[in-house]
Image (tube, rainbow, N blue to C red; front, side, top):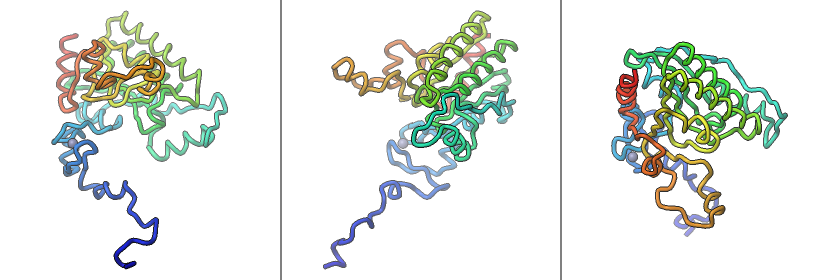
Length: 280
Ligand SMILES: [Zn+2]
């Protein structure tokens, strides 16, 4: 019966190969499992036409989506990380940075730029989750702080798009200092009455939530984004209670008064434009 019963082990198809549609042609939604042509998915701002699942996307997609004709001046694009602590985990930190740069084509976990959105000047800082989990180290903090100063100097509204696991472990205290630095700079922006809009996308957690992501004149979010400070397991263990349903989803956070509104990515440009027009 060896032709009928699989005797040998290790010839199973790995799960990820089973589920993956051929690259480039089709997109399979991880939420509803339905298939969409990649082109249609892209035209739909990388949201699922069946269930509206918002795929995680990087700064290139947001810049393309928001800046008119994808034209913008990138700010501080060559800032790269040092290794202040000589940090080594499974790899030395400088090696991790180097290999991540190669893999992602990015220099760090945030890109900043100045361009026009429906004709309105706008500075955007957008995080990239693909770069060490969108973690906030000194480069991320410094680039955001400089982008805020740029906004302040030119009196241009500032949009922060967050997507981050929190502070970058490999820079420890240096990462945490970025929270104070960016927050202080945002206070100056607020004093000068230059609008600051913070868009939280899936996921926004840790030190990023605890600093610039929640300091907007408007804090807005994409649907169903995970928003929180500590993870649910840590909280459950700390308070010794079960957590309510939908805890840490954008909808839950909105209901509890921490967000102003939730915006579909397809409507993002229009909504931001009317918001900025109102604030002029
Ligand atoms: Zn779907």
